[in-house]
Image (tube, rainbow, N blue to C red; front, side, top):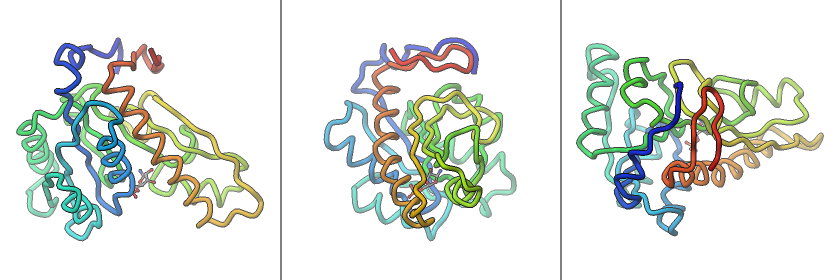
Length: 215
Ligand code: GRF
């Protein structure tokens, strides 16, 4: 993850940017991203949804929006390597430039991540490095934090760890319940993730070690 982000995206021309979302569940971020792009967020295309869970609501949402889906079930492959090779096959077939993790409930291997260096981003529903893991909203709420938020970051080999692209803080009110907090967090996510994608697709993110400069 060291050095500057390459500008090959720019050289390709903005129209050529192709995005894949990887998701395992409800898909509210997927829908927010799809709708923002449709409304002209930036001239990139959401070309593919990769999903590992046949029961995920996101699959039906993608079909409704007319976005190509690839269902890749872990149990159909002998090991993680083969499972990831199948995902990579779909990404290469679509010539994907940016991989957007949106509630994808599997850790990607170091080999996968280094094969798409600086081309994978993730959203986390807390202010990293606090409250990593799958229960970021609940963990901040149960801890009694007064402030939490949302983080969009590049993905490196470690969980919820790569360089931070955007963060937005949110106060936790005394009257908040876990449900009200979840709603507020998701509302922020649905604005912040499209914004990070726009910056990426427009070549406005410059990586300097752990720091992401916004040009
Ligand atoms: C989001 O809260 C995201 O921050 C986390 O997983 C959740 C996915 O929600 N990584 P959805 O499937 O996009 O509704």
